[in-house]
View 1: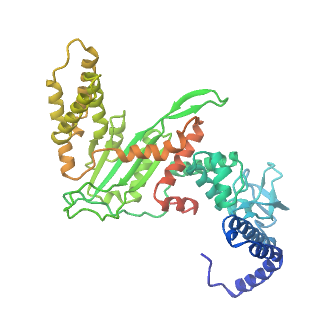
View 2: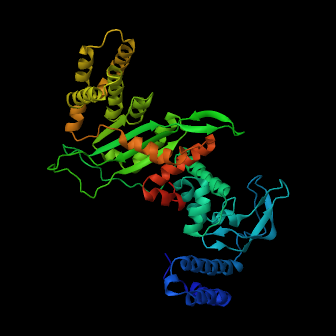
View 3: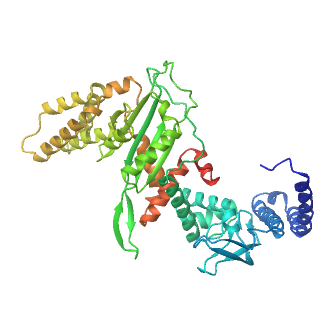
Length: 467
């Protein structure tokens, strides 16, 4: 927002700056006028808009250049404390710089300090204004990082999206390094126990009994890797975790049914975490959105190794653990396929029957049904699959009281976190032919999770609003 109130000194400076900008931009403004009057009615928009944008950007870049021309730009006196050896680094004069902003290159000079003791040089202005190692301004870094994580590839971001939407001309490697450095910085921030923005408690939705409910979920998804020399490497499994406020499945006449305009709220975390580290960071995110204010906590996961214990350990306050219904139903489908390998209709009928029992009568009922099921003789594969399914259901029986969950209006499927695995990780890191290094995998997972979370989180990161 442009300030409307200035001190007398600032207003006088602004008036002088305006006159300088007018004087030095006269040719650009004339070029814009000539461009517009040269176009026929059918040409006034379209390509002309891009050409006009380029001119306006040149004027804005000149405005920055003129403004910085008379500034000290990082001068801190005859010496500063060296960041490497803590001794005095002496002022050596000014050095030229042309950082790339959203409106183009901004030419300026900034103070340079050199430490004769350790040989380290520094530019205080570069750090103060937030320039990247590639001399991108903060706004350019943000736009470049957003394009890098939102597009299907870094090349697409560089060659098409940034050029068309922002007039930025960057190479693919610059987009990649910029996005990965931003993701790395966000990951380091989380690892240091920091959060973004001020706490923003959610208005938790209510279940069929009027209790406010908060959900947590976690899953993992595979990402293909490549070695340093470009050769094959074993894939990695980033975790995707979330705390969320979904729309409850309530009857149409329920007094607790949310507004039709209500949408799910979610905070995501993703990366090559160990579970202890992920649990600590997810608890901090839960605290930010006021999870403690919710009366009922619910943990939804599939049967993946360690996932149930992750929820129980990190969210122990009377949390209700729910086994993903659709994951359980896949066991039944695989068994039905073995029983009726050549009869699709019979297979579907059997699977539908079993799912109905499990959903409306619960885990104990489906276990009893399977225990009494008459299997074909001389089919050890079928018997083996039945034994595997029964073992899985018995181990998760305490999480399969689906009739009660449904009666309360609780979700019984982990579709939210499975969707997050696709939208946060899969749609950017798992496209055809993609191979990643571990550092890039972790960094882009972090940045994608931030990008897909609430918009305020993305804005707070770039505004350096850190707790």
